[in-house]
Length: 467
Ligand code: 4AD
Ligand code: MG
Image 1: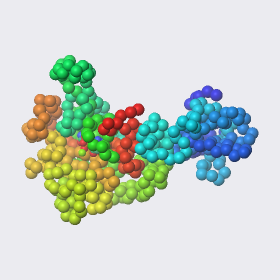
Image 2: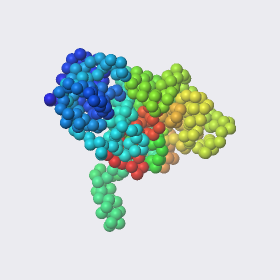
Image 3: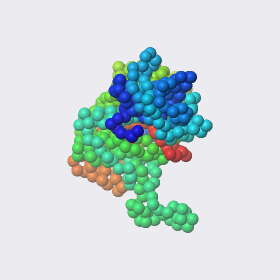
Image 4: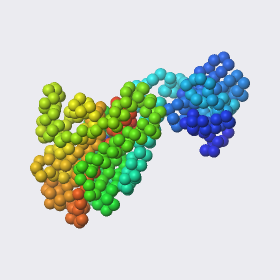
């Protein structure tokens, strides 16, 4: 038996009838095995879909008893046989084995993923094996569907995919949540108690992992008009919550000749397109999430597609929160950032759906946002959704050179560091806008999963990095 792409069939294709009535070969990992006196049933999964393929070893299957013994939960297997329609039962097809080979055993006394269900907390400790469970297989496939949907959406609107850098010298958000990148011998420097000399460092000056590709996207938007980034971003935020990661993926479209209204329109269409793609292209996995993870999920998403997104200003949001009569842990007050509990009240109770909040106080938003004529608020927009809160953050950008320079200084940053960013306002400046969608927040929302750590293959959070 030799591996070849030619003669093996993926289980998803077999379930759809590919190779029906003929001799095929499949590969996969054993989920369960059941034996009676005369027949052995093996549920095989190869990750191509949620469903397992039922493999039947009947009495006259020429597979030696000793080989059948080695077929245990978790073992990898190659099976040949005739693909037949399944009489009754849950699956449409089954494989009547004529030959089988265990490729790698999984000893039952030590293989951690036996039949019973495990908690997500436990599975995080074995992230190298959790991909073999129904939930994590479904999450991985949903991520794939959504990634393709992101590209399709922007390509259809004439955006170019921009590869923004991962190592950078500037803080795109001005919030100081940067991971430093260095080749300086920190141990030796610490023991000698000498000063850091950045001229000795790899780049000759301090460098960091990017918190956002936005500023680089602005450069290209001011040349190609419409671009988007889709890459990893890093934040040294000390937030140990179910919606923060230290390493997460972000999608950042940036559009020249576009104001806040245009920005909001694209953001809303984008979210709708992603929900539609999930329901259409990951139907089986979405059914699973709906049944096992969050009952009612599909109906909620369909309702969202049918409803309008509410649009209010930050000032209106604060008024609504003050008048709610609710007792919040953090009292809402003009000038303070919206807390997660406030976002949930707006989306889950007051408006029962997505809410787009605009025009936040300048003090609580980044330096690059366009200042309104009131001199107090900026052209910001956050898209909030039920269960999660903020899923998108964006704004119209400050395109006036002098105003931007002042805002950078007011934010305690140095205009010298951002000289190239200021240059964009010096040469052919244009109104432009963009936003960032946190990919894991999206996946969390669309899967109904409770913790962001369970929707990224390998989560990195405060005091936790492995695998
Ligand atoms: O609101 P943020 O900080 O905005 C920006 O980074 C802008 N540069 C975007 C832009 O205008 N191009 O982050 C954008 C989104 C958030 O709405 C959230 O979905 C996600 O990124 N996000 C995180 N996701 C997971 N873990 C974290 N620590 C996150 N921080 C932000
Ligand atoms: Mg934000």
